[in-house]
Image (cartoon, helix red, strand yellow):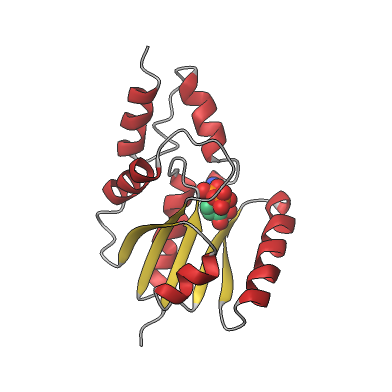
Length: 160
Ligand code: ADP
């Protein structure tokens, strides 16, 4: 059986930082499921369908990446797609405590599921979906921060 990884997240919307993690995961694993998790209490700008569509349009050059969505526990999603690894990106020390908590809980729920972390590229260490939304909302230029389909979608969302 091939090595299957899941890259879970909110992706509201996909940024170049997310894209970089997905692309690097796709070089290491046979199949990568990018899973838009739909149970966050966060208020989202894009619907789950829109977020999936934007990822789909942005990863057309990565044939072993699949886009999906799930409501529920990540460990249950991993079982569903036979994934042995969760891949998460790490930006700064501030990400660490949260990730450690989630990883420990996932291990309690599903012992054989490993979590691997990929360090962000330095150029994306400041980048988050929230900051991109903030910049786009006030008509700032986000073309260096997100894939082109996301830039277009943000322009449409915030069109005056
Ligand atoms: P979540 O709400 O689950 O944290 P996000 O969409 O914010 O979902 O992030 C999904 C994954 O991408 C997480 O592992 C996060 O750490 C990672 N990530 C987000 N932004 C970046 C970035 N700029 N560089 C590297 N990884 C990132």
